Length: 348
Image (cartoon, rainbow, N blue to C red; front, top):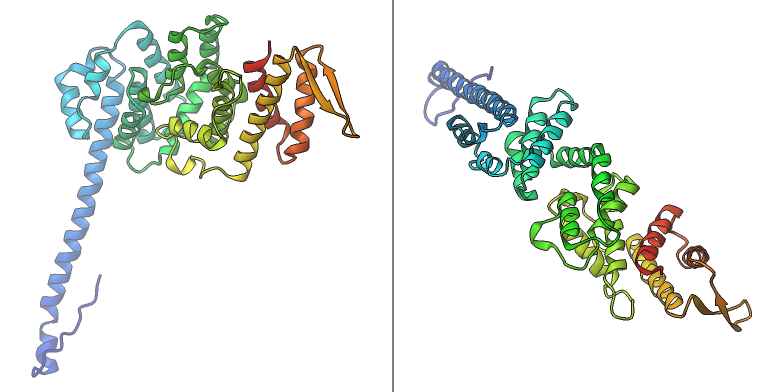
């Protein structure tokens, strides 16, 4: 309890000022009581919101709940009107399967009601085509005290949990993916719907993500930038994008998936080295393939010789040696990513 302050009033004796102390104490007690009542109300409001969020999230399991009056009322109480209707508009078989997978995944999470409710609602929205912005906003509406990193971990873990299913879908895609196949891969990746670029191999990007199993957003984005660099080439087969451009494109795709703090802070020395090495590997490999699997190379004395390659493995070995010499800071895993991307795009 706060001790009363002695008011010093000019021209008034200490006895009179001391006499005001009980009144001051009453006022201070009232102020403290009001503050405690406000805090208690805030806690009660949050508890009620948590309860509503959980009821709504559980209700999403039942087809038809989304369009009910109860769901609409809950949406208004939670401040996210329209979420249920968006789900109701897309209740086909594949989306029911997706919802079932979401439920199964959420049940495996720690027993934190807000975390479970936020991830279930957000990922349910994703299953019916909600944009990354809506997914993030939905998560924060259900779990305002939790960082978006929790949702990003859940997205990545759910995709990994469904790797077999995704790989089975990819296995059905022909060797030359159609435009519909590329759009499907783009959707699985979760990139913004309005930033799809025709001509890029999103199937390859998805396959690379599943194979690498990276958890670091910066590493994932950089691997994607390498894919962009490898795929977007001119009529002569040379990459059109600079390292800065490739990284900017990849970062923009992931901007609504990962928190801003997880995105690469511009073209760092490591990123520039990786993308520059990719660019040089592509140019060299394209020259070898265009020359009939031959290349004119200098020996240790500087004399030029024509070298003929019997297969792509021999080309890859020379590219690896050149990258190691020119970019000693790159590890074997990164070099393999670069060589995989180069081989996918250039090998005959």
